[in-house]
Length: 175
Ligand SMILES: [Fe+2]
Ligand SMILES: [Fe+2]
Image 1 (spheres, helix red, strand yellow):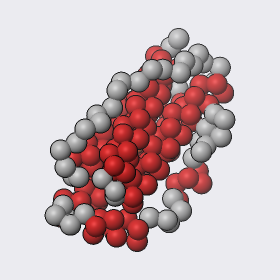
Image 2 (cartoon, helix red, strand yellow):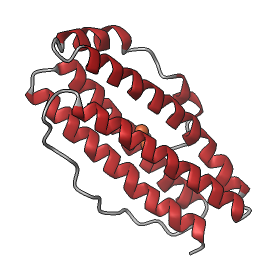
Image 3 (tube, protein in one colour):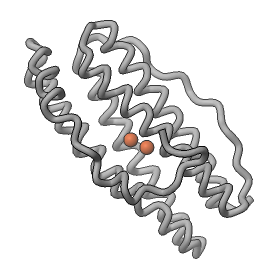
Image 4 (spheres, helix red, strand yellow):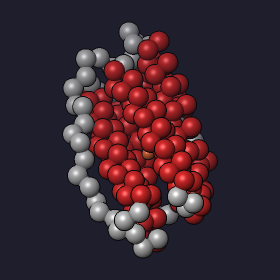
C-alpha cells in the first residue's frame, strides 16, 4: 500500500476514537442531568463516525485496501463540567494537525485527488475548533451555574450546518 492510503487508514482509527470519546463525554453529561450538553456531544459523536465512513468510502472508491480498526479507549471520568470540553478542544486541535499532515503527504505523493478529498476536512476542522473554543469559553465562564450553558446550547443549536451540503459521501450513507 502506498503511503497516503496507509495514512488515511490510520486516520479512520482517529476519527472513530474521536467518536467514542464524544460518546463518553455525552454519557458523562447525561449522568449529570445536563441534557443539552449531552445532546451536543451525542451529535458530535455521530459526526466523527461519519468522518470515518467518508474516509472508508474514499478508499473503497479508489480501490485501496481499507480495514476497520480497533480504537484506543476514551477518557471516561472527569473532575468537573469544564474538563470534557477542554479535552474535546484538544482533540479537535490534534485532528486538525493530523489532517494537515495528510494534505502534505498527498501533495508530496502527487496525489491531487486525495488532496482535494481532504479540503472539506480542513474546512470542517476550522469550524469544529472554532465552535469548541466558543463552548469552552461559555462553560468556563458559567462553571458555577451550568444551567446557563444549557440555555446557551438550547438557543444556539438547531441551525443546519452549512458544511454538510458539500460533504464527501460516507460508506453506507451518513447518519
Ligand atoms: Fe472528525
Ligand atoms: Fe471533529
